[in-house]
Image (tube, rainbow, N blue to C red; front, side, top):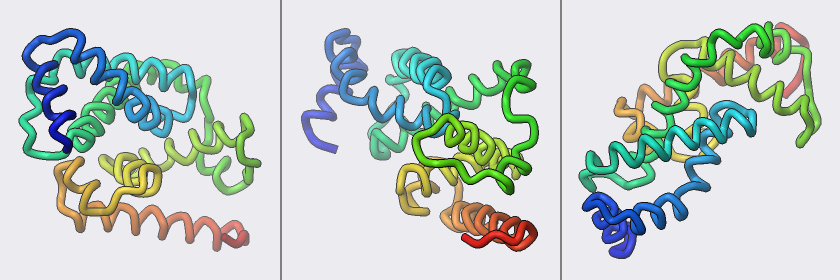
Length: 183
């Protein structure tokens, strides 16, 4: 972390509203990008990012400079995304009804609406594997972090992240074998 970033965070923690506004301006792209990867829908990502900014204002004082700021920020966005997801469960029937069917039978072109639906199906399937799978996939495959970096963010062992990624890849391989499709 640069001295300038540390000074900005410290000023925001001390109640400097302009410093907080600058901090949000510099970090919003990261917050929004991660929210979008989490949910796959622009409007939903905007809601999650907004909630993350509100939560950032309320909890910035808890950041103790013991880890990288982005590590702490990812965790904050993940928690907001999970809270948002729980609040949206009543709308699940409007979303993809059978993620596994979509995963096996769809091969959408990049940048299309079908890609968004496909991504939602993948993330729904990954989330269905259990606690922590979606987060591991988004951090490692979506954000390009190492297993060690993801483990720090998720507060788990590196081997846990590695196992989760391995398990996802293994199950996708099984689907490919069952459906007769190649990589």
